[in-house]
Each structure stands twice: as C-alpha cells, then as structure tokens.
Length: 294
View 1: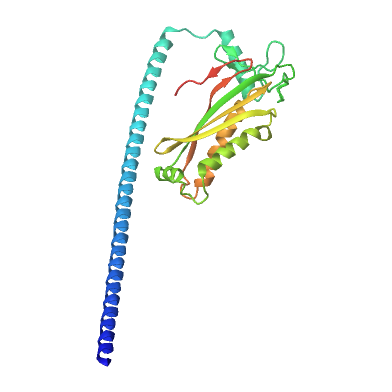
View 2: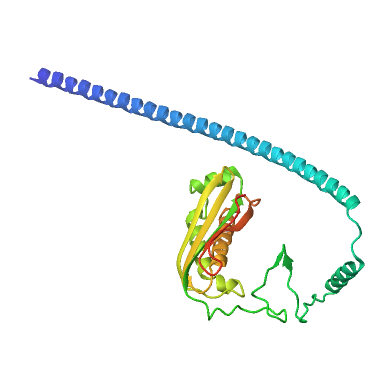
C-alpha cells in the first residue's frame, strides 16, 4: 500500500514539473514574440521617418529651384520692360515738340502747391480730387473741405449684398504638414482660425473707423492648402443692408491669417501673410464686380 502511494506521489511530482516547464516555455515564446513585434514596429517607424525626411528634402529642393527660376524670369521680364520703355521714350522725344509754355506753367504751379502741402484747387475753389486714368474717382469718406467723415447711407435702399476675399500665408512644408495632422501644441489651427475670421467679420466696425455696423446674415471662412507651402484663406460675407461688406470679408481673411501665425509661430516664425485682396462683390449701386485673375 505504501509503495503504491509513493509511486503515485512520484507521478504527481513529475506531472507538476512538466506543467511548470511548459509554462516557462510558453512564457519565453510570448516574450520573444513581443520583442519581435517591438523590433518590427521600430524598424517600420525608422523607415517612415527616413522616407518623410527624403520627401521634405526633395520638396525643399524643388521649392528653392522654383524660387530661383521665378527670380530669374522676373529679372528677365524687368530687363525687357526697361528696354521697351527706354526705346519708345527716345523715339517719342525726337518726334514731339516742346510742351506749350502756358500748359507747362500751370502744371508746375499745381505741382509746387502739392509739394508745399496745399491741395490743388478746382475752378469753384474746392479741393480737387485725384484723377485716376481718364475720370476722377470721388472719395466718399472725404467732404468738400477735405475732412474725413462717415458716409450717410440713410437714403439708400436695403438690398442683398455679398463680398468674397482671399489671402495666403506662406510657411515651411513641415509646418503645413503639422497643421493638417493636428500636431501643434495649441490645438486645431484651422478650426480656431475659422472661428476667429467669423468673429472678426462681426466686429469690423469696431476696428475700421468709418465702417458702418451691420447686421450680418452669413459668414463663411475656409482654409485649405494651395501648394506644399501655401495655405489659402477665403471669406464670404452676406448682408441685407444699405452698404456693402467688402471690409468685413477682408477683415475676416486678415484675422484668420494672423490667428494661423499665432498658432504656429512656435515652430515657424518666418511665415508670411500676403495676397490679401477682394475677389468679388455683388449688390448695391455698383452692381457685380469681379477681380482680375492673377
């Protein structure tokens, strides 16, 4: 009886040892598999980093090459324009006679008054306005005495008006990539800039002295990459009122661009804001106007 019990005890001990050995083997295999997974992930991350560095390097080289070509082309265009300007001037100087004495004296008299700080006078004795091209452009924010004023729009009709403006902010390609991946410490750059543009459009009359406060009916601000180093900002403002919303659209674009700079200046202080202009306006006495394409 004792022999049977001792034999059973030995079998139990052998079985327990086998179980422990299997557990150790399984644990070791799991650890090795985990190490392999970590090594693969590290290698994949290193490959992606190297690939991204190569892409950034190629983009930088491409941008530098494009800037050199643009500078060279600009220099050539400027040189050709200078040559064309000097040649016709030389020919016209030979053909044309001298300017009449009376006309020259009147011109010199007006120029001397302007240089002394006195505005040229019209035949009625009022300050004359600057002539642009063939017709005079009347400045609505200047009265007959030359003082600034807010335009009285009481007699105008309430109509639907709309204006669209655009602008660009130039930055490093890596900065634009961080904006798109939401990798900046201050948060979602595009969302904050969009809200800032809407808020600025509503507060334009507080920033621009002669602007009328308006009950704006709609503001849309969009931000999207234009090139690998340009972020394009557009703003469209709508209103039913007696005056237009061009300044509101331009203010929205400007404030959105400044907000992008503030959010990203920690990684790229060399950003540039440029190309802010009115693209289109509708409604009002002047009707529909569209900017010329660049």
